[in-house]
Length: 92
View (spheres, rainbow, N blue to C red):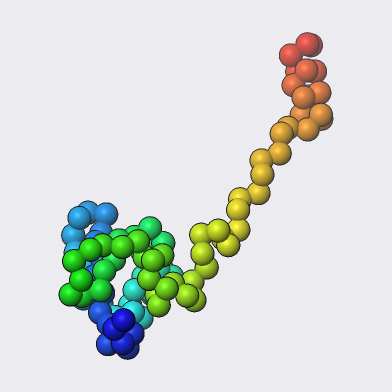
């Protein structure tokens, strides 16, 4: 594998444009800023195939994995008081 200090990367944007070459630090800052996610397509300069960013551990080892991100709170169904208020409002 290439030395991670010298490795440069290209990103394939959602607009099908290539961005880079960029350093690993720049790629990590783009991830932190929300410009890239674990499914973003990326490759090392000189390689021909695009990979999901999650497949490059040298870039994602310090980032939370999608599974470790907090899930949204479950939506609670309306309580009995709300249903009682609706009932009272419609029966008067």
